[in-house]
Length: 316
Image 1 (cartoon, rainbow, N blue to C red):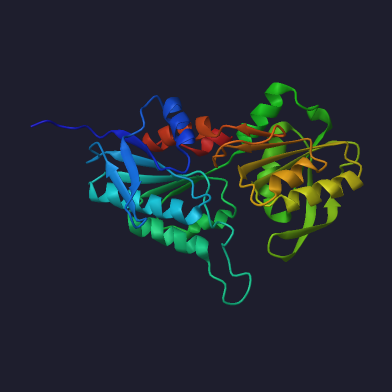
Image 2: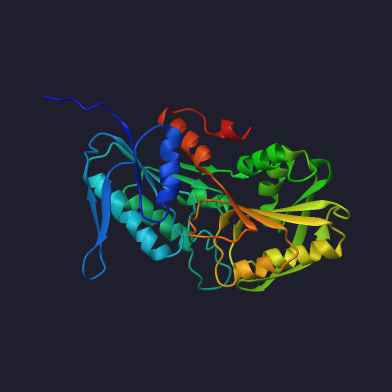
């Protein structure tokens, strides 16, 4: 009787196959074979073309637009691997959709980030690997291990190695109080000071910057955030920084959602260039937006998860 050793297998949903292929190349493995289709009524159908019995399975799937389609696809994949007797199932979600619905901002609001956590766990996921959760407390919504990776090493490496700006005259800017921890890690890596924007939200997707905390006059500002969605907050932040004497403005964000007229707004703003990672796939982006790949960081993290090694060491 043949014996199959416990192997690591990497599969991809349809939301970001390009990133999954890069991760596989970094890890020196092949993507697993599975076919995703639809029945005539639109229901998702998955066919796994290789055995996963007793193996450690990793599924790469961002729950980006169309978020509900991609989330359901991930749940169906997890269920398929669970029923095929996989030893473990790690959902690798570079962009965790619904993360901004992490609390009750008003009466009768849902906490959808918690609902998604419940769905993933009940479907059969045994671990979650994600990048820059909008709110770190979402990790506590799960009763399974969650590895929330930081993206700042990708950006700091790019700026330090390519002489894009004079790092001695740079200030890293957090666009709001909630992003201070994220931005401070980036600033520490660059050896740069930190500034903070005091922002108010009168209603959804609308932000008003009312103050700048920190010294920014005469400096090059690097706005550092986790998500660029409509782009309005970013553009307003750039306007405020210009009013306070900033000479040049660049923006870095882990997840480039770019909904609505975001790209047009950014193109007509004070921002010279925007850098995002490839957690969300885009067919084509304008020249003022550059993509830095998160694949090496994710690939290294997955190898460490598989070998039961420290993941936090990647960010020291």
